[in-house]
Structures are given as C-alpha cells and as structure tokens.
Image (tube, rainbow, N blue to C red; front, side):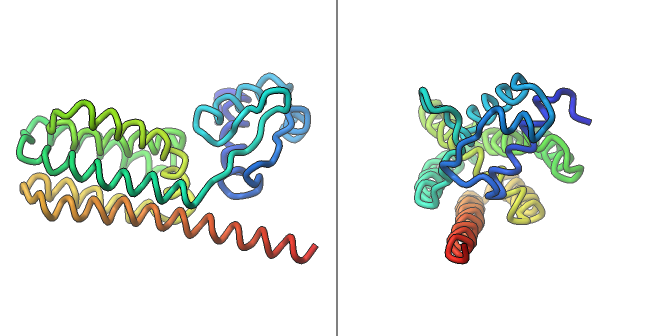
Length: 225
C-alpha cells in the first residue's frame, strides 16, 4: 500500500520514464497526468518534484516539466570516473579497515540484501548501494575524494536504480557485493579493486545496452508509423 497519492504517482511515473514509455524530452503535462491517475494536480506536482530531485524530470521555465534525456555517453563518463576514484579510495581503505568498520559494512549490506530480496523500498535501493560502498571507503580517510565520489553517485542514482530494476542485475550485484566484502576482510586489495572495477563497469554496460535497445525500438516504431 502506498502511503500517499503522491507516492503512488511518483513510483509509477518513475517506472514509466525508466521503461522508456516517456522518452527523454517528452513533456509531462500535469493536467493529463492528473487525469491518468484520477487525482488532483497537487500529488502530480509533488511527484514531479520528487523525480526532479532524482534527475528523471527537469522543469523548464515557462514550459513545464519534461522527462530528462538518459544519455549513454553520460553514463559511460560517470561510471568511468567512478572506477578511477572508487578504486583509489578502496585501495587506501583496505589497510585501515578494522573489525568495527567491516561489521558496519556487513550490517549495511544485510539491510540492502533484505530490501532487494523483498522487492521493497525501491526508492532506497541506490541509497543502500552507496551506503555499502561508502562504508568500505570510509577507512581511507580521504574526505575530498569521498565528496567527489558522493557527487558522482548522486548523478548516477537513476542509472543504478535502472540497472537493478530493468537489467536483471539484482542477483549479480548481491554476489559481487558479498565477494567484495570477503576480499576486504582478507586484505586482498588488488583483487578487491579489480572486482570493484568489473562491478561498476558491468553495471554501466547493462544500463547502456538497455538504453541503446530502447532507442533502437523507438526508432523502429517511428519508421513504421
């Protein structure tokens, strides 16, 4: 059960944007959406603002709300930068990891697994994902690098959620997270950094392939009209 109409509209609109039903650049008219969902414009407006915060919607002055473009080039750039910075953090974090820091990471991972396995808290999946990675990187004590990584993960949020929801990446992500934690426990920095690189780039390729397929299907549909 959704707690509010706005929450219901937010979740369903997110699904429609990520699935490609609303292509990048499509105008999201509040009156039309209110009619679709049989609600007033107030929960629609709240939902659009929520999705703007997630990067899925943008408001253009004097024109209204639009679905944002989901760019393959942007995805590749963001995830390449994540590989560079997050590998740097993890390599420096592993020698400083303590039982307490590893326990914290394991606790976050258990909560993340529970949310993924139950199919609940979809809105928070990417937050759990970053919380786990952040717990691994924290012992590096490199606040400036962590700040940059936090920014990159915020910009990657919608793509990470898309990967988990639409590329059947949940089981793969869970396996890789547990393997990564095990390598950190064993202080195998080189192997952990390589797995992290594969983990991030694998997610990137899954999302890029999904979007490219959507673009091809959209172009094919346009040709048939």
